[in-house]
Amino acid sequence: MTAKYFAILTNQGAARLANAAALGTTLNITQMAVGDANGVLPTPDPAQTALINQKRIAALNMLSIDPNNSSQIIAEQVIPENEGGYWIREIGLYDDSGVLVAVANCPETYKPLLQEGSGRTQTIRMVLIVSSTSAVTLKIDPAVVLATRQYVDNKVIEVKAYADNLLSQHIAASNPHTQYAPIASPTFTGTPVAPTQVKADNSTKLATTAHVKSVVADYAPLASPAMTGVPTAPTAAQSVNNTQLATTAFVKAAIAALVASSPATLDTLNELAAALGNDPNFATTMTNALAGKQPLDNTLTALSGKSVAALLEYLGLSDIATAGVAMGSLGGQSSNGYWKFPGVINGVRQTLIVQWYTASATQAGAITVNFPIPFPNAFLADANMAGGSGTALVNGGTVSKTSRQLYCNVAMSVAVITVGY
Image (cartoon, rainbow, N blue to C red):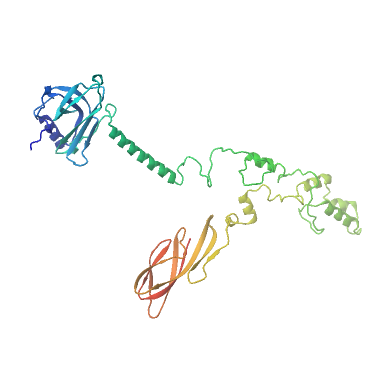
């Protein structure tokens, strides 16, 4: 049966499409026109340069390749409800130069006006078969066209899927907000501020400079401390003769020993003056000397005010003091087991794991053996010993954090020690 309704390229349209394909350019189809053909259903003529009786021309709403046929182009236009009052029997497509490139007829349909008592938004669609869809620009201006309900629904679904995917990636990311400091071990820059805790607070809360200054204000400085009250210090033995702090007890004992000594030990005031360095300000010198000594019942000045790193250096400790290293743990005391050795390597807390296990090969070939426990980070090395009579050889194959592949040349049992962390 001969087709009654069809669409064809006009002579000018076919020529322009062929020229575009030959030169590697594209044909820009931009507008669709409809007409009533003067009341008679027309037959599309390739020689046409215009519609028989055009009623409306406007920008395309959509121009795309038919997903079911790559040789077909679908052109679509939406006529709003406030336009109409005419029959539609003919359709034409125009390029950006105003040339009619395709023409089609369609079943007669009346597009009413709202003033006539009926109104509707009507979609006009033309399906055009071309030899090369790549030579046609599939592009429309979204600012001057109307969207169908299906088009909008599809776009909403597309945008929602895109937004859902972005949100899921954002939630799954370990640090989606790189502009903010992480909760764990943040590195602050600039001048960050925080609430200042009361002086008596002795917790793990953040200590501001104001809090630290208020706390250390109660302690004497290391250099030239001005002590008050009744500071005390250890009393040195009478035989000590160095820069150690001399308490009143030490001085009194020294004077008593001096007074009680024989005249041959100290028989003149000149010898007493010489013993004291002949210092005319001896009392002041002693007071100043005592002021630089550490009280007996106070915090050692050498440690006061030092940071954690300085304390560790002072005490000769390394990173092991702050790593919170626990004791090792044993898992299994049979032929399969492991031992964990927690420690600090290059300032980072790590747990070295030594595992042992046995495996059996019923015949020559490869066997895969699971470790007693998976290595959290990486496998390092292993050693094996083959059991059985004759020449038994075992080679290591692929390895992961959870298992090891072994190649045995005969049926045998194998004992393995493996190391990782």
